[in-house]
Length: 126
Image (cartoon, rainbow, N blue to C red):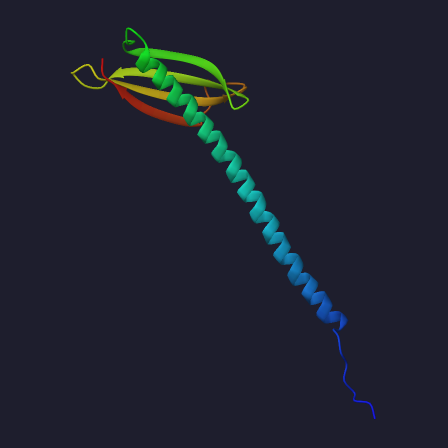
């Protein structure tokens, strides 16, 4: 006598399992692509911050210290070209100056009109 039991999965059960697996894999791929994009954006912001910090450091080391006004320049960092715009303004009556640096990646068609990727502020005392 043979028992009337079946071992294994039906076609419907296999299709449902594959559908669940496909949804899970799609969610994982989407998450991985978002993380990759986020990492690339963070790398860009880090490089822009280094460019801005270097511009502030160069201004602090300049002799004589530049008076109020604007300066700009281009530099290569991390295998990319960057444009920085520095605005120097008087912060206090004691002569302390505020340095605001806006950094944009190059090449851009209208680098002056585009929003900066990063703005960093610093202060210097003569």
